[in-house]
Length: 141
Image 1 (cartoon, rainbow, N blue to C red):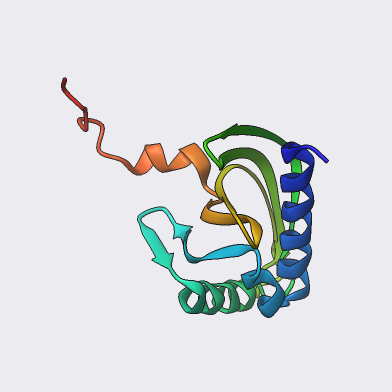
Image 2: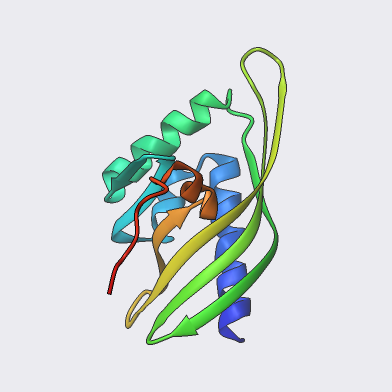
């Protein structure tokens, strides 16, 4: 199985855990000190914080959250993989309104010698975070 296939399978399994609200299984997907972009400008790190965030997110989306990947690309190097994905997020809000968003997510995975591929950065907002960044931020060399 190729790295691309392995990571696609892992993302499918993680999505299934999110959809089923199986947060114990979901934490197996993440490195111990993984970081999750909760929303633009807000990140959290570590299993306990991630688990608590996913519980909050499930409640926020009225326990109807359905996440899936609609295409992905993998760039691999030095036991690390960048996954660029089209992530579909669907739910019914507490107001009864449908929520359906297609995001261009970015995930970073690191290969662990004993646990295999683990997500170290989970950013479902992807490059949309650039919209929140100061426009005058530049690296001058």
